[in-house]
Length: 369
Image (cartoon, rainbow, N blue to C red; front, top):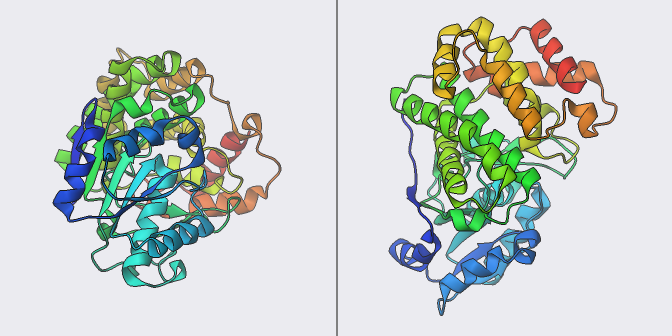
């Protein structure tokens, strides 16, 4: 299979490279897009400090979950400030927003032309630079972007190979202030991307090597980062795992993300939902893809007959994850509609096995709780 990655710069203090990388791209007035939480945490100021006397515009109100309105507001500032490139500072929500905005401002067309119609993004976009402040979404190196019509609706795709960023500047120093809850959720999301990408039926030995390495890094470091956010080594390892996960996404995902997508209509944190789903779906994968699951067990350092699904369930407990969506606070929903949506999810298309409706129904009911 064919895949493409951005230029990746991963190191402590890498943020200092931003002005030089923008100059190489020919960007003279970038829009620096982020969310209000990163402004309050002082992370955004680390980026603006690195820009020194360089010209730039800012938009600091990107919503926690990427929405159509958030894309429209960001695009309006880009046009008003006459920018010529975009820098996304944040987690997957900010980065996904910027990818959609790039299609809008390059073409001068509304998001409705691309929302759910990724085939329409068939032209080079204005330069995108990503600066991840979480370690999990992998969006910093992948083409994907999921945009919610509103904060309480399921996301719809709005990305193509043209949405792959030009440069990803991964500076672990920018993740040190990430709260424990988000550290855990985004960290298991990175783990799940590596797992599902490795399991994907699409063929890429090179991606598989990266995915297995990411599985080991995420599994062995997410708890340390959760317990001690100031641990720079663990933070750097988790950024490596996130990049590995973003690379693995190129092969496709699977039922874990089908479940998280179906329940992504109430504004709950995506990574936490992924964490709840991971043990359930890998238990099913142990039946349908046993040889690949044995390779994952080896990457995790498991011995004898220890099961990957049990190891992931135990990790969730150590990370204080909710046991199911009811435990997480998800209210009543139409269970049959959820089963249909999860079973029909495009994520299942790249899975090594297509869950039957009965299998998906069992997964949904256990995931729901």
